[in-house]
Amino acid sequence: MHSQMTYFLRDILRQPKELRWTLEHLTGTGAESITAAANAISKAKHVYLTGIGSSWHAALNVAPMFQEAARPVYLVEASELLEFGTFPAESAVIVISRSGRSIEIVRLAEKAIRAGAALIGITNAPEGTLAKEAEFPMVVPIAMDHAISVNTYSTLAAAAGVLVKTVIGGFGAEDAGELSSAIDEAGHAVPRWQKQIAESKWFAPGRTTYFLARGSSFGTAQEARLLWEEGVKAPATAMGTGVFRHGPQEMVREGMRFGIWLDAARMREEDLATARDLQKLGASVVLIGQGVPADAVDLVLGLPKIAGEWQFLVDCMPAQLAAEQLARMSGVDSDTFRLCSFVVEDEAGLLGGATGDGARS
Image (cartoon, rainbow, N blue to C red; front, side):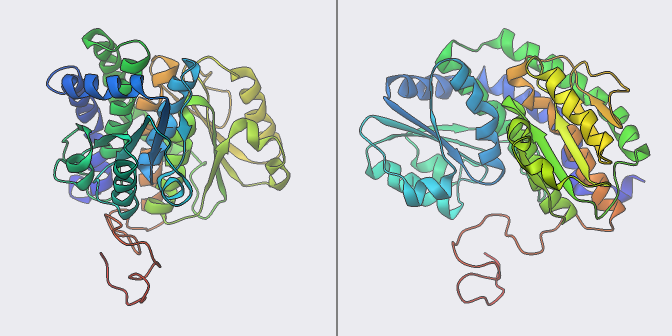
């Protein structure tokens, strides 16, 4: 059994340990870099928060912390900000990137520096361009994932969250300890989640899949969509639960699959009603959240107690396990990329750049 374990699953299983280490690092030896970056953000008149791929989803996870503290930020995906944005004076640009070498990230860093913006780089790679060029680098040097971003996604989201909390009010060892306790509980829940996933009829290859969420979990829903695309090699869609009710529900058909994250405090009854109505329409629903009745829908993957704004630290783990399980059920290799490079270092085409020669970067 152990010999058949995918690298994807191995990365998922080491995630609680990596998250705990990240929080210890950011309140220990890494605290100085957090303070410096937070001071730069506090002095800026304009704050941008950006990333690409899973790092963009980490940005989506933490953006509500800024917004709820009445500290609005410009939330723009890196490739769009690069081509269609101009930084005004007194800007701070928070760039999240696993490798710090993706072409859009490298060019965006250059653009921010030319504009005189304070560049904060949150990355896992000390040798990457972002870590070297950022005025305020925040490096979380964990072991890289085999292929799909698992630990690199969650640890960068954690680092971004710690940065935001430092800006808006403070973050210390006691806060880190509370989050680590919830992360430990999530780690203990993994066998239960695996059993539920293995026994559920929700997981059927080839079904149309939608992911819906709000607040800090909106980034998680987007990450789940990417896990389906990269790991299961299957199409999926993700959007806000509120947005879904303004037209997209017209395409609901029997046999469709929906994954819905419930916020810890807001719109819970309303979103439960949406989930139940989807089941009445013939769709199959899995709910991920805290304190959800086990019989609420087809499948409930319960989360440990954690502050709602930090729920993203644990609520992607069930989705990661689900993607790995469905990939194996579908006979798909989740440990390799068919078309995508580990680091995308060019901006043209899918098969080796503008020439289409099939060479991988």
